[in-house]
Every structure is written in structure tokens, then in C-alpha cells.
Amino acid sequence: MTSLFPAVAPKPDLFQHQPNLLVRVIDVETAGHKLEDDAVIEIGSVDVDLVSGQIGDPRETLVDRGSIAISPGARRVHRISDEALVGAPDFDTARAGFAGAPIYAAQRASFDRSRLRLPGRWLCTYKLALRAFPGVRAHGLQSLVKYVPLDLADVRDRLEGSHPHRALYDALCTAVLLRRIAQELMPRCVDAADFLARAEKVSAEPALLVRFRFGRYKGATIADVPSDYLDWLIREPGMDADAVFTARHHLALRERAALAATARPLPAQV
Image 1 (tube, rainbow, N blue to C red):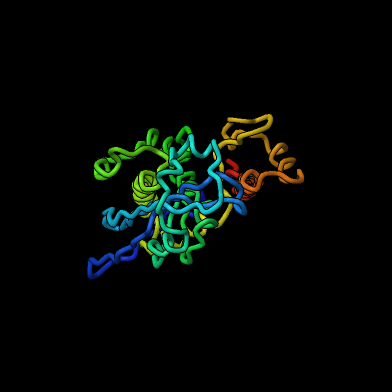
Image 2 (image 1 turned 120 degrees about the horizontal axis):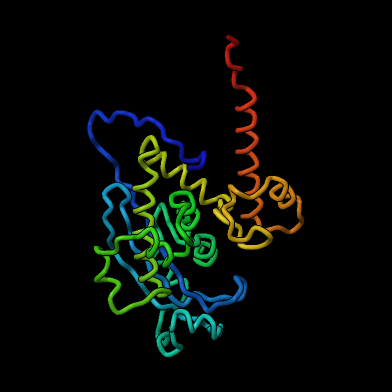
């Protein structure tokens, strides 16, 4: 477990009261272009209370794409047709139906946040899942559903008739994921507010990878990658920010371990 989620002793609660911690889990489908050329064509969300675990208030809407064409690749993924968007509200009208939550979460929060531009605190379930479930084979949403595995029983009826990469479907799966992450990490925190503060910090940083996706050590557990390679990586211009952040993290861990080892007292002489 990383240093951002060390176990701490919980404070005694004399009144046995836990405040609600409601998060709006949101997902968008788009026309499949770069940010400056993209258009949101579907938004879906549900609210999850991370203390009680309840998931509710499902919302979804298609969105008028304006003059932006849907790319063939995006259409193959979400299967949203031009005909389906006829009569859909414009982006500002559609977005207003999801505004007002103090906390949002999304599987790749930087993507959804950049397109929705909704103010509030944001959590990234992808980055949090890397901390909570580092041993899972892959950390895409449907991989996490399969390999954690996630129990979708209480949202199964809402998933019927839909498929991955539709906005509400993915929002429901992401809400179950966030609930499971909270179950894993919140017991290590002082309280729900402490968990939220730590989770927000993780979400704002680059991802702490478990394995590199490229190079000589592609697929290797980063704890097993030699330090000289990590040192080279952080000095290489234009390197992926997640990889650099991860390399720095592991080098710092190794430096602290080496210092601790040299600081150990020598065994007593007989």
C-alpha cells in the first residue's frame, strides 16, 4: 500500500454517527475527437453514498452534437447513431441536469471533467483502483469488473438492455467500483473526510502505475525494475508523466529503505 493510504487509528465516535458522503459518478460518450474538436453526445450519472453504499438517482441524456461528426471509431464503441440524437438537448441544457454536486467521480476523470467543465471536487477511480487493487491484471473499467471482481447485483436491472461504453452503463459500473474502493481504503483512514482528502490528492496526481506499458521492462512489475532504468526514465525528455511519477515514487521508496537499513544498530558483540 502506498504512503497516501497508511493505516491510522480511527477516532472514537461517541455518538455512533457517520455523515453522508454522496458522490455523483458520471460518464460521457463523445464524438471521438481531440478535446478542442470533440462533442459530448451522451451523459449518464448515478449518486453513491460511500458510507451506506447505496446507489441511486440515475440520470441519462443524449446530447445534440451540433456540427461535429461522430468518428467511425467512436461509433463502433458506443453504437450511438445520428438518428438517435435527433431532438436531443444542446450541450448546455443537458449538462445543467448534472450540475450542483459537490463531489464528482469518473473512471478517467481528466477526460470527463475536461469535457463537462462542472465545478466541484473530482475523484478518478482509475487512479484510485491502482492504489486499492495493484495486483489486478488490468485497470480498465470492465477489466476491474471482471478481475476484482465487482458485485453488480444491486445495479443489474439498470444494466439490462444496455452495454459497456454507454454513459449510464459505465456510470453504474464505476459507482460500484468506487464503492468497492472505499470499502478497501476507508478503513485505513481516520474517517470519511480523511478518505476523501486522500482520494482527491491521488486523483490530482499522475497515476501510480503497477507495470510499465512500454520499453525494455514492458509488463514487468515496477518493484522489480532496476533502479538504473528508473533513473534513466525520469531523465528522458518527453517521457509519459505517469511513468515518471511512478519511477520517482519507487526510487524514493528504495532510498528510504536503504537509509533505514544503514541506520539499524549493529548487533551486540559477545
